[in-house]
Length: 340
Image 1: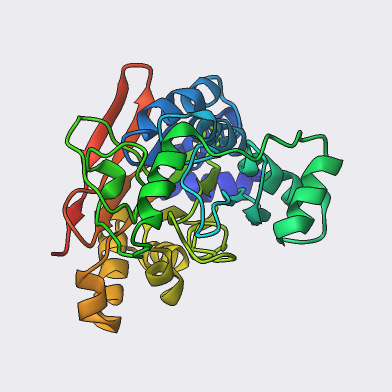
Image 2: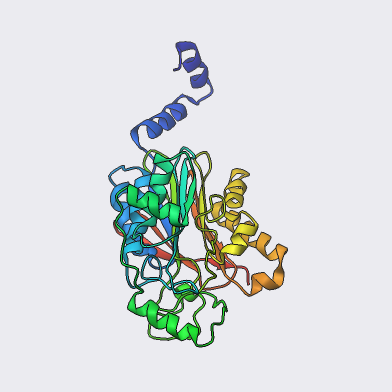
C-alpha cells in the first residue's frame, strides 16, 4: 500500500499514473487474453478455450477445455482414435501446468478419453507430478473417469494392418499437416485427399488477470515401441509455464525436445529478454547444434507466449503452423518460420 509520501515521490517522477494503471490492470483483469495452439486442429481447440477467456475465466480452465476438443475428435490422431503402438494398443500422454507452478501429467495411459483432465487431477489431488501406465488408469477410474472400449478406430485399424506388412519405423516429416488421414507420424503411405491428422496438440494461454497456463496431449508416435514416452507428458520438455515470464509447448519428434529440455529452454530465453519467436528459434538451433544430421531428418516445432501477450513459433522444417486466437473473429493460422 502506498503512503502519501511514497505517492508524492512517484508523482514527482511521473510514475504515479503508470503505477496505478498497472495496479488496475492486474486487479481488474485488464490484460488482453490470448490462446495459441499447435497445428490446424488448434482452430477448433482455440474456440473452446476462447469461450472461457473472453468471460475472464482462468487460463488453466481454458487450456484444459481447448485440448479436450481435440482429444474427443475422431478425425485426427490425438486421443483414442489414434494409431496404436507396435502391439496394437493405443496409449495416451498429457500434461498441464498452471500459473502457480503446479503441474500434473499422465503417461502411457489406456482407455481414457480425456487424459488432459486426468493430468489435472494428478496436479490437484495427489502429491505427485506424473502417473503412468496401469497406475494412471487406476487413478483415473477412482476419480470417476469411465474406461472406454479397447478397440481401434476404423482408420487406426487400417493404418496398423498396413504398417504390419513391413513393420518399418520411419518418420514422415510434417505428417501432422501433410494431407494424410488415418496414418500417423510414421505412416508408410501418403495420400493427397485434402485430409490431415496429427499426433499432438499443445496449447498455452494468457487470461484477463495476466496469468499463464498450458496443456499438451498426445497419442505419441504411431507404431512406437511398447512403453515409449515422448516429450508431451514431461514438464520442461513438451510443456513449461513460468508466470513471471510466459509459457511454451512443443510438437514433433519428442526425443529431440527431451534432449534439450526444450520448452524450459524457450521460457528461460524469454526471461533473458528474447521475444517468443526468437526464443523458439534459439531452441531449434540448439537441436541442430546437438546433431545436425538427426535434426535435418526430423521435425520439431515450438510455440510460446509471454506476459505481454506476444506470441511466436519456430520449427526445424517448413510445414509447421499454429493457431492464434484473441477474439471471436480473430482465430487464425500462422505458418512458422523454419531452420531448414
